[in-house]
Length: 253
Image (cartoon, rainbow, N blue to C red; front, side, top):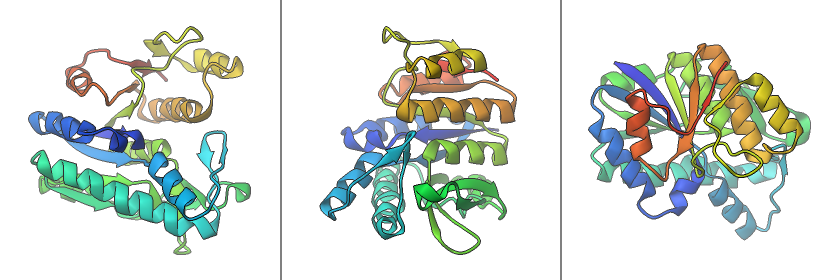
């Protein structure tokens, strides 16, 4: 049975019934098994603001000082993860909430200036294959642990790509836009390395989408096949992708 890693943007939590609709579609797809990896940037922003912290990003990555980590961990591994679990249960799944550690990923500091932003390294045995055998739905937050026991905040796109590599799974990055857009805000159906580099240099692709596209390209190169960026706002897109149709933007290695 084919395994699909689906990265869900945290914005899905801000749209009523969006996650539930997506989980209902997954429940209808009995010929595949799924692993959900999620972010929750808007929720983190809200929690940090309420706590009196300012949020800052560098090239689409959230700067994560140690003093902010309890709020980041609480928002992502706690509130966002459990909100998704609630919607999955309503849709008939048997979800299990995980951090990246249980998913087989050890983290280390990406760049000192970013604080506790982590990069993905393999290093521990993943519990995901056993959970899938039991018919459970893994819901993985982008919170990680290092060998030093410290918490790390990992970009959820990078986390999804790392898990897909570990599982040799297909991957779909589901975001709040229908596809990667060109300078005229029109969807781009396919992108390769040269096109991506050009669009980034021209400032067409930037910020969070730049991270997403670069991560998608790395995933495509590691998996040696195309990966998709599509919209969670149209759950039917997922059915089409599982059926082999071209929906959204295909990133090719």
